[in-house]
Length: 506
Image (cartoon, helix red, strand yellow):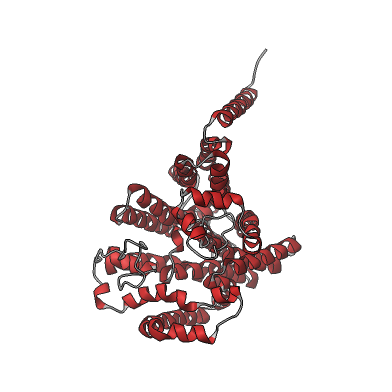
């Protein structure tokens, strides 16, 4: 009797699955922290191996993990007990899978199974510089520095990874649709939280004190803000990008149009429930940017308008802080509870204090002043301090100075230029509109994070920003391939001898 290698491999796989099942059953039944907590190492190992061996499948696994990890954390604590180790292990899961995804990608690069272009190398280098700068320059614990470096720089590496394995625009569209579908229940739950209140799981997790952010969010305000299945109300801002994507998908493609209409309505209602002013208008910003990006002239005018408006806001920050915001509040006052919260523009004062800081000459140094936020014993942060800032530009200037700011802006501009060229060189109108929309989907979020709240450190917003940007690269690569094909098949001029077949393929 002989056994072939295929049957032997299948036997080992079946035995391995049975072993994992037995280990999982024993862990779930004996772990003091409960069954869900016991599953964390097993889930992490499985997704890590998947990301390392099959990076494309790992992208899907990471997306599911990032979008659902905070709700899994709450459920594990509620059903298992308030163990801090449970929270640390669960929050570490996305970082471990992200590291494995990068390891698998770099391994494939070494063995020439995939290729990376110059822009991809630039993005990888920029992510490495940002990660090292955050980890070695920040004044905080090792865990906090590592977490922030991974959230900001680590997720940036998803751009070259995503557009390497998502080779066509349809591949990217399926991946981003997968994200939106996963976020849909979380958006629906946020609507439930806004209209019907929070459930026992959310209150118990907040009372445990395992998350300072969650505790402050639930008990620090008169009316806690909805957050869905995410980690905070700010993280619910991811509904802005998914909302714009759902409306676009509904109008752009016929199949499953009813589903995407329902999804678009749910995400729109989630934006209303989030009570976030900037995110509420995000789909309109995407529409404006997509319209402007279709032509070179309109693109230049849009960037000029953004620069002018930001300069005016910085120069008028003193007036706006002293009396301008109060005048606007009185002009747009609302009687409804939702209107009072959303239309109350005085909360923009934290951003204005950062913009006010940009006016002072002492804020601009070559290598940074190292003057951190002024804190008070009572509130932790003194919002009225002249040193307070809320935007990423100020944080870079404080820690790294003008050199650090230009070290970020210059590579960013060099990476952005080929994407705009890809839009202008699109082979047809539909491809141009798709490329313009995809860039418009993420760029406003990048700009808003630079001049306002730093969302690069917020899951799943960092995931969706960088993977949305990868969609433009897939169109760029498809456009370049089409142009190369057109050049290769272009008829030769009369009298020109044809090249040998081998030479034409080099």
